[in-house]
Image (cartoon, rainbow, N blue to C red; front, side):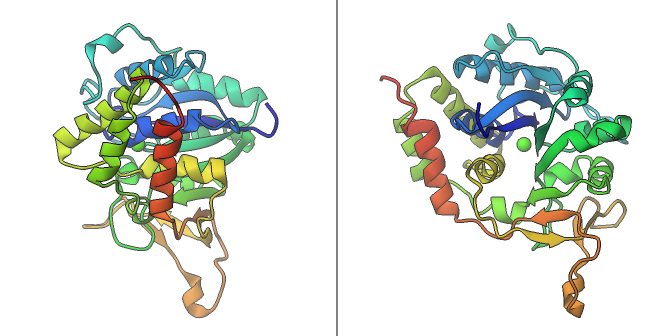
Length: 302
Ligand SMILES: [Ca+2]
């Protein structure tokens, strides 16, 4: 494949619908090649089964899926919790093995971008255990943090120590924070448009995932994770701005926050920039393009 963006997607697929929507979006791009999917956070075995089910319905069963860390670096999680998108018919699928084994083998001889759309435990463990292979990570895209408002964003909060390790690794990270992704909030009309075009088993699964999350939380879909895929695949103008970002590991109210030390207030550029932070998105344009790509253009029969 010429000029393909070769990517590994690291995902907490199974709860919020945005992960499964993000992978489905990635599969629509000829210029994106998913070389592997790794799962993270809590029940990574069942998350892997959900991903395999998605890939089977998308007619891309050859893409390997590996189960990663269920526990955070310093925190034991409930690794038996069943993700709300998991259904009994997914039991038949199995992952290809352990995420760290895959990452070590892959980056030992190959390069790819790492796209993190869950907490950063897998990436932190990989960096810590394989410092000599980190230079083979060609790019790091993260849905995470919140840079222009005060909020403890989920992917950082679920493992702040892992995030701190990644942000201090020397990698230049591209971050799309919650303050940007939250603008991509679907309306009821958007969901109805997806439902109208949900004429294949794959699209029905995506829609069901949205319904599961709505029934659990009352939230209509917000395209947090798909926006990272769109930004990468389309080279969207996200108004990238260099920042020197630290992860707050203590703090009565601030644990897990992404703190920008903004030397611009003194008229200086950041001397230790480690992150390119997205500052803008055309949310309506992205939501419409997402629905077109994943639901309208994919065909199918009623
Ligand atoms: Ca996610």
